[in-house]
Length: 200
Image 1 (cartoon, one colour):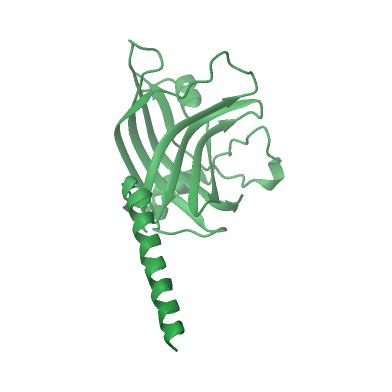
Image 2 (image 1 turned 135 degrees about the vertical axis):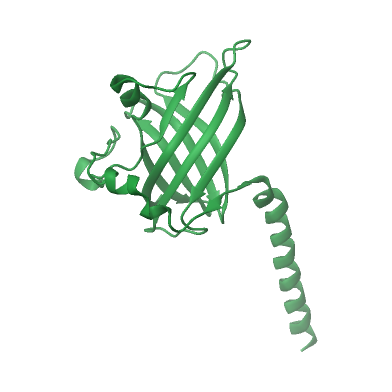
């Protein structure tokens, strides 16, 4: 009986210790997102129902929802105005997978040989945003992107998602890109996105 009490005590102690470790080493470092369950009712999503999805080069067309998943625009400097500028800034889609307990939401595009965009790590109402890019060409120096986030607002329709759930969201950010120092470039991202959480 005494052994059982000690065993229960150590299990409780382990759970508390793990919870504190998780909070201070992971959760507290993430930024709080806004939660708005009504965001899925925004008119923009009904408009997106009538627009074609942008399919990544590695995806089979018939396996992807044909309704547009993203209206997010990425642009540097001035806001795009012409049809060509808007098409280029909005040439991306949204995909999400559950990985390591987090939801990884990618907004961007992949040709299969190269690609890039922005990735959101989402965990219980908090998030981390960072740019990503890849290419099959091996660079001379493989250095990490140099940037500073000046503004990041993110809205999700739910605090927690499982595989198979639909995600609806809105993003608005400003990032200072320092890859071309001493020149600093301001990169903007804003718009709505939606997708289903896939199993990795």
